[in-house]
Length: 107
Image (cartoon, rainbow, N blue to C red; front, side):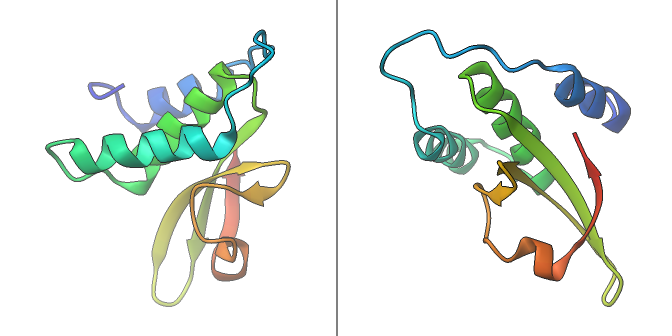
């Protein structure tokens, strides 16, 4: 994903299908989000919210979770942000993201 542009990243997340959970002992969404957080801390470059959210959404879908990457914006001051939701609940960021940002896209 690192050598592609936003359009390719968006398409990759949008087209990634949810794999059915095959094991009796399913990994929780909290465990998967924690794994991505640890990977981001250990990565040698700064990881932005879009990169982190895309990786989290793809990982969650690979483990059977119906995750959506959400991209939002606020007007004043101008800012954009990305996060991941499962069943319309924010799971990799603060729960009040919908109060701060207007949703532009879900994929």
